[in-house]
Image (cartoon, rainbow, N blue to C red; front, side):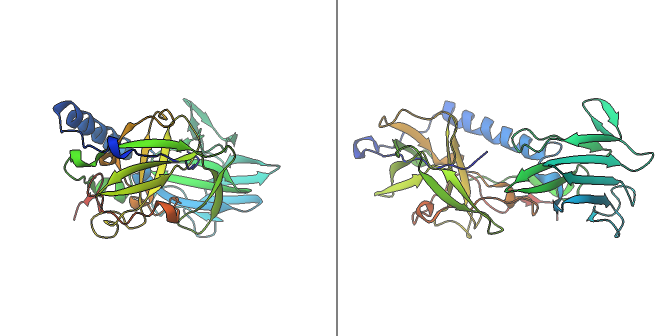
Length: 295
């Protein structure tokens, strides 16, 4: 999803912590299960095996060292094919005798879509790949569904549910057109829509988070005082599926803070929290770090 920022204001009168209840705890457990299943899925974050910025023109790929794009050893033939970047498009041409599979068909040549929101995956046995266009560059993402990272992964790790981190908050819109500079883990900067912010009370003080991205919900990139101690140092994500009515109190459940893809794979480019989303308070809730791995 694209990153946006949106304000949310919390009234002191609404700062009471909701009591724990079985329905809430079951809902949170079900959400944990869905997050676990998504992470473990084919072509998911645990399977990523390469991220390659392609040059204009022909880009040969395969496991052989002579290729422009070198896939991990043991994942396929030395020369698998060519990706040609020209005219704003990417054409995949397989080496003689080889095919990729897409939507139930075996193909030796095709143009690949480049929309990150609608990933145009093609598969080759244990491998899958798709292309994204970003800032004038075309990037190949490779997934290996038999990767050691996926096989060695045991589980995500979560704090115990804590109703103290179910806080009352308010969403405050910014004037239309506001942008927010977001830096990712490889120092790329993008200007993202910033529709508003939320404010809430925690540890006796008012906290504020800018929203990142513009869709039907609210997305936050945040860091708190647990970062680097019990949680992922660069920060965590939080998402509310439905945007609340401006000025109307709503429940912000910090127990649903979760790790970004970069906590699981080196082949991702996650956004870092803007300075205003780095909180001094501890949020001992949500996902911990590191995850459990074999060995």
